[in-house]
Image (cartoon, rainbow, N blue to C red; front, side, top):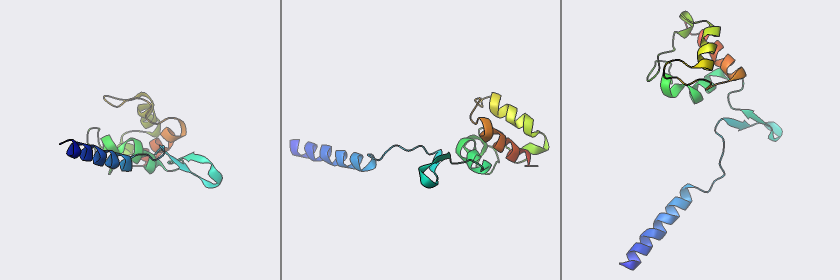
Length: 113
């Protein structure tokens, strides 16, 4: 019985060790040339949306937990969208995107009509 338990414990330890052990990485960052670090979505609003917004608003902007955004620009201006990103609305938390990232995504969503 002890041998079986020990074998199970060792096997579990090996499986867990194989799953982890890598260096922790920030999925929101890419390494640029010459080792410089830039945000993954710098200049790419859709990537930022996919990373921060699509879990609630849908990968295709069709909605889910949050409202559909496929026609957001038809009734909201870029400034309105940027204000919602900054302040939140309903169950949406404030500040998921900040600064240039918020501006890029707001501009991209405002073009969806």
